[in-house]
Length: 285
Image 1 (spheres, one colour):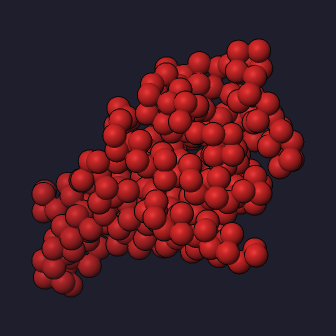
Image 2: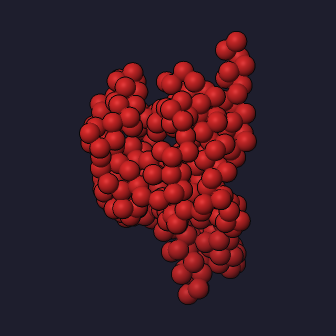
């Protein structure tokens, strides 16, 4: 169901891009915006692991340096049929984790020092399983595609904004008697909002899917459920100095506590995620 939802949402982003491009610049407008957005996001996709790891001062660890964590990641990766990802530790007390890398052969699992202190083995196993599910489902690629489409939409909306400022209407301006200007203004305001909402819905859908598949991989849905509750409480008590552009990567929203940011959260409510995991336990009995 989440895979179908993701496909439909990506289709909605594509449709929105074509609608705006067709109104403002025709086929050439769509192609131009898509090429620019693709170039920008291709670099982000290819180098995302290096960029985000450097941003959070993460350090790669070996089996000798973190034997329990390394063994846990390796065993779960083998169980899921994945190559062994690199393992990184992020300095800081805020408990959180994320996965990155352009594909399963260049994957990274990163956890904070804080998460290693507050979670027991079963809970940490649930978190790692969740992150490995993101790797297996190619969620970095999916989020990059969504970002490319959304970026192209925002680019076209900016073009529409400048066109409205300088008095150039859409292609139906002459027939609309000036209504094209109003259309451009509305497009410049509403299109980026619509694109952001769809992009966030894709992110939430992938989180639900990673929860479900991660729980099956570990075989302990309550381990992940308990971990999510702990991480949510701890994130509110010890806020993380996180970059909003990377918030969607973490297992729980690192921007928790910022009311404005929560309006545009890339994560589903923790209560709903926990309820779904508990339902998995109930239906398995």
